[in-house]
Length: 268
Image (cartoon, rainbow, N blue to C red; front, side, top):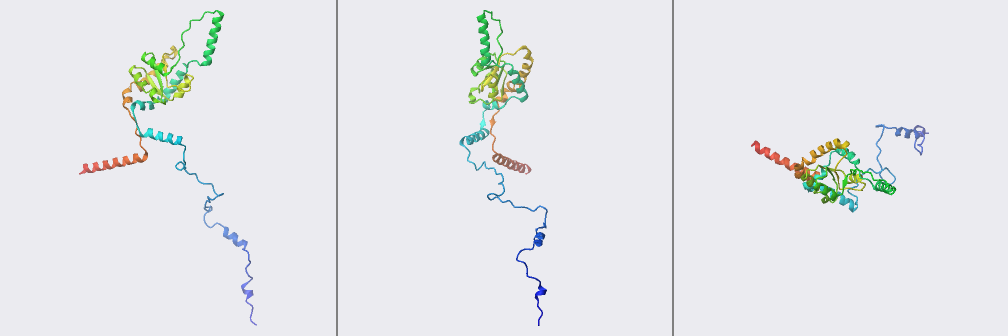
């Protein structure tokens, strides 16, 4: 009778996987941290940040603002308008505003209080004290123009962002003609805050108190040096004409080609 071969082969394999074999297979064979591919499907990983500015339909006013900014860079700006980009130095500007702050005109509440006190004294029969006229900053473009024509203004301060620019475009030329120190500062809202207004195109100082004369003379000297003495340079300096990076690269490439050709001719 032949021997059975089943005992040599062993038992039949189980229908489920062996847990020991699975544990062995899960052990990392390569690096400690294996690369995990991101899944950008719905409910998966967070989408990466993308610059969508080229794909967004911006509102019309935003497009106009951006186009106007680029146009102002590209177009050549005449010297008469370009001079308003030459604002006063920051340190000098801070000292100027500190000084001008001392000469702010009275606001409505202060004026009302002063007139009320004056009326009370008059009613009581008291004699009005002989009081000198207070020194204040002068404002209003027509008033400043008259002060410049009469040579009463000792310093004229113009805002750099007046719109329309035609309101003050003539004022620097008048100041240079009448030899009155002038400067351009940022911005019309800062000038307006000095005279209790939202904005102011220009301010003028007619005189200062004796204790501030030294500081005022130093400011006028530095301002005169920057603006009045450099009048001819300011009158001839054009602005704008700044092209985009592609156009600049093309211009530089053409210039290099011309220079290379000139060098070749020189060698021959």
